[in-house]
Length: 58
Image 1: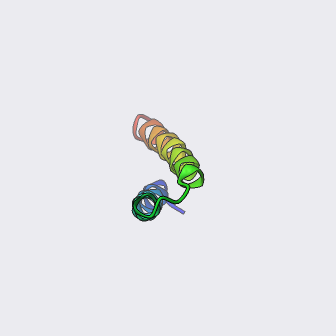
Image 2: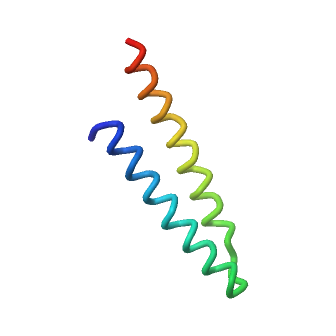
């Protein structure tokens, strides 16, 4: 999978999880697992962006 495709997929997952988190908050359900998933995706997105920058600078 191309790095840009991976980044797009991660962004899509992030937006979906944000929606799920908002729904859970609105009915007072636990959001901790979703917050952890969002943090993991943020880290992955950062790593992919870093890889993209490295490839562009070569």
